[in-house]
Amino acid sequence: MAKAAEKATTDDRTYGIAANRLRSLVERIERLEEERRALAGDIKDIYAEAKSAGFDVKVLRQVIRLRRQDEAEVKEQESLLDLYKRALGMG
Image 1 (cartoon, rainbow, N blue to C red):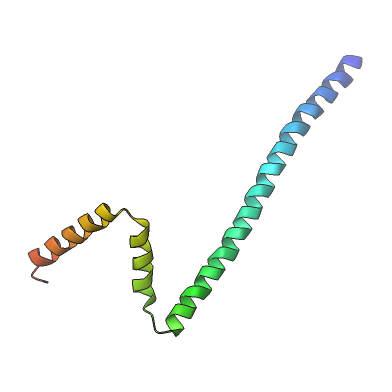
Image 2 (cartoon, rainbow, N blue to C red):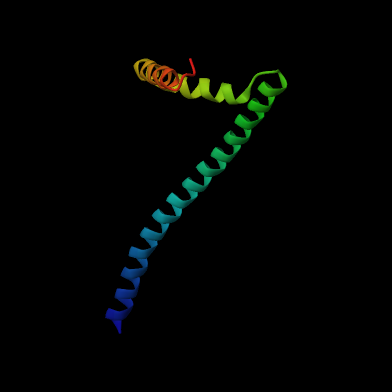
């Protein structure tokens, strides 16, 4: 009987530690997901502000995407786009 009680206590400690660690990870992820939703809302508001100021939001998104890229990568994409457009008689 003592061995069963000892085993139960050991299992509870083991699971308790794992459960606490798991709970901590889940709560951190939940907080970050909430922050991400809040930031997404803020970004949406800024795009709405840009639109109301007369800026083209679609082009604004492209500019932001381009700014994230390496300059050489942007030039390569622009060259390919130009090549494709010329091949199709568009420019």
